[in-house]
Length: 473
Image (cartoon, rainbow, N blue to C red):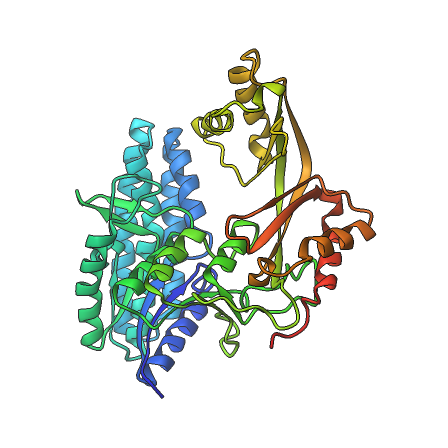
């Protein structure tokens, strides 16, 4: 068997308890025993990042008495997890000291926030980083207690250098790849398992930064690209990406293989396996990403690769649904033939921090419709009305809530005639009215907006039409 280099990312549920961390350590030990090299990337314990966000908000309000209570709670939680994860007494004693020291540092940061009643983006990143800074040493200690040499590293210590965009920092890829390759590869050459804190990096000025949503996955693929890994494995609590949400379609099947483009289409519209941004380093380096279930390690999961393959029996591979969305439509004869109108609409939304999920424009150009989160529906309508009504460009701005976006995805969608016709025919037979349609630039899928009350029947109809429950061939 050839020796491989794996980057293994473990999410919060995988490291939620002491026994689970011990299971993670034994899993890594198994692959090490087989001669493979492993880099572990670790998230905060399940729920800890949310607790830290709440703590920052409470301290900003000047809630001084809360700090002591929070300190005791987070200290007790991590000490308890360590006791369940680390078998060796010496390693356990060392990790307890480390945890106590880090929690004391967190206590000081929270006290400072409560004193000035302000959380700067830099301070918030510092606070949120403690989740991974506390969990990572526990995993390293669990490995050491099994006789596996391991070293805990923060993102900065591993070489992940970023800009100073706190809260959503962008890695400086050139210097990051060089530093990670130097630091992480040297540990692998020494037979040590680097255990890297996901989600966090370090600015060029030495400040702790966070990589934003999906940051731990991003850490894993950045490291994978830097050290030329054979595969990046995202260990989660599901068997892989599925043809559909199994809560809606119990006969949904696990997808054995997807292309990066297909995976991005799925993730953007509902599949929660990882953040699309996290796939970029792996795609650029041509490194496969595998999504696996830490609670069912015998299942090979879903492999995401560069090449696209069409399913033998169906052009469609999977479908997703995005809920809690709404549609805004901007209408008016003044839009027709006027360059830059769409740009003005989107500039207004961008200025107000509103992200557009899907866009459709009529052939007549008399209206533009787009899908956004329903939580910002009123804000979007208000901003557009204030900026555009009376300008002569538009007549009205309307909105519709209570809808969802159903998307079909597959490499075969692009080159197979009649896919859209089959989709619309299937939902029409269920009495479903399609309110809006759009196709992505990759042409690997298209989306339709339907009433939320029609979501289940639409999904069931399309899933059955393309026989997505059939095992892959």
